[in-house]
Structure formats: C-alpha cells, structure tokens
Length: 251
Image (cartoon, rainbow, N blue to C red; front, side, top):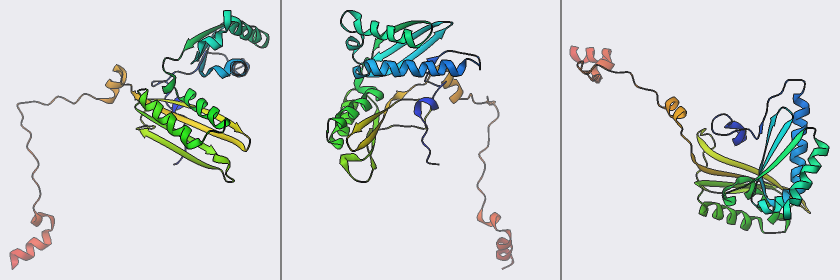
C-alpha cells in the first residue's frame, strides 16, 4: 500500500506500447539495451532543447529506425537538415548498424506530460515562482482539452532548508483505471540549491475498444420467459427468533 507504479508501464499491452520495439536472444539483449540508452542520451544531448516528448526505437536485423517526437521539429532538423545529419553521423560512430532518424511533430504540446514537466523544470531553473509555474501549467493543460491533470514538484522548493513536495491538480486522473489513457512525464530542474523533481500526469479520456468491451461486459445467461421467477419473500420477525415466538404463543 502506498507504492506508486509508473502509469505507462502499468498499461503496457492494454492501451500503451513500449518505446523500444525489438526482440533479441538472451546473449545479445544486454548489448542492445545498452545501445538504446546510448541513443537516447545522444539525442537528448544534441536536440534535447527542442522539447523531446518521446524517442521510439525499432530494430529489424541490422537496421535501426529512430523516431523523435518533438514540439519543435524545425529545431531538430536544422537549417537544410544540418542538425539531423550531424546527429545521424554521431550515432553511426557510437552504434553499429544502419541508422535512420525520423522526426514527428507533437500535435498538442500543452497536453503532453513530458513537455509539461520539461517546461516547468526550465522555469524553475530560471528562478520562476514554483506555485505560479505549476498553476499556469495546470490551467494551460485544461484549456488545451485535457480531461484532467496533476503536477507534482518535490525538493527544496523556493530555496527552503527542508525538502518537501507540493502538487496541484484539476479534473480527474484515475491512475488505477487501466482503460484510462494517461500520459506521464518527468523532468529535473538543476537549481543552485539542489535538484527539484517534476512529475506530470495528463488524463486524455478512456479508451474502450471492442476487445476491452467484450471482456468488461459479460453476456448474461438466457432465461426462459415462460417460467416466472418468484420474488423471495422477506422473513418475518417471528421466524428469525423461534424461541421468542414460542414464548409469545404460550402466553
């Protein structure tokens, strides 16, 4: 009780897909997993300032397909594609195999939890008031069409001596409902008085597909209409206490 589960990992196979899609044998698996971490770190170092929401990695034999979801695709691509060419050349040196880098724009950055947490972390690093930054983010997310949002900051907020958490929420965020489409993102604000962690949960609504609807609503057994079911009669008070009823009859 009281343990917090990652909302994305909790919903894998229900309405979320893993960000790395490939299969490998047990001997090669640790190496490929380490390569994925190298790729993500290199992308964040080069174009992390462009607002990276997600990095998807797909492998097929020796081909690696990297998809970067960003709020600013022009910054990632660069003028004439210079930035993305430099990123591809850097990844070719660090990872073996042919690498293809694709860029996709996030349709609504105000409802993307990773981008919300990154924006708040940047504001905290620029010495913004943390309460004002969190309240503005909650208001902006709800105005963008989200069903619910919750933002939590923890650390030495405002430069206080003792670290503490504070959070603001609006709407509903059903974390334990598996059919709920919840986006989750984290970021760190490296301030002069310590690191402040930022978490964001955004509720986009419930996803109920055909398979889930069949599993959720089981068909009722058919009943014969000719046979009328009698409603069970309530027991009398005399029947509940037989000893008391006998005493009353003897009187």
